[in-house]
Length: 278
Image (cartoon, rainbow, N blue to C red; front, top):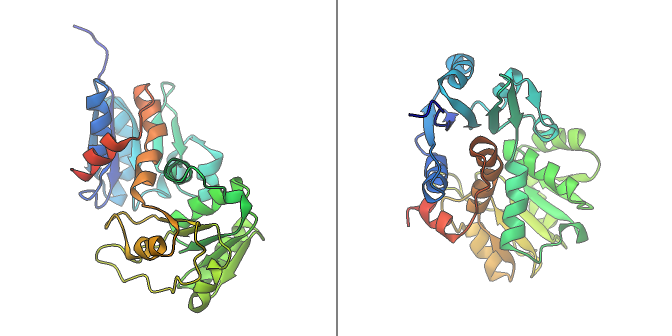
């Protein structure tokens, strides 16, 4: 018998029951014939450090991290990527052979790859972007849009102070709009992104008027429950190229899986069907 350990990975959060990550990584492990397991773990805040320090000893090679631990784990990491430091949160941990914990944030990567795959004609550098919401997800989106060379990023949040704080942090390329005038951000915008929870199942509706959408604009909703939100339906009716939020979830998982299990997985229709339970 081989004494090689079967690599283990997982996702930690609280709550965790809703996570699609086990289905996602389980599909890759199964279809690629990799001897490994991916496990969802509900972890309380006061147990987080103990759990993370213990898991490598049990054969874990890394973790995904979700709410409410994404900021806290940065303090436990020995190595933090530039993008995780900029965003102020990590969603991917790698337990290295030398015992060090490597923290990364792949949300921006997932966002960019999702739009590149779903809207190949997307040219973000050719015009302004409009971003709704100023929470944790917005930080990753803003960092990505800046890196992509977007000339102006218009930002609006129901609580303006949060948007102003992001402008102070990310720089003058961010232009903040009051929420009551958020619809004005759409004028000439080639990229439009909803990073808020508005329109999600069980959450308030997205009520910002979208009549200013430019036909041909690429419109993305990070919400994927429902898969085609009212926000996306309105954008589609306006002649925009709409991209749902599921693809970001799928693409952000690629770098972690590759580091943990040594093989780069594919994001394709079979994966979408597996994750959706179709």
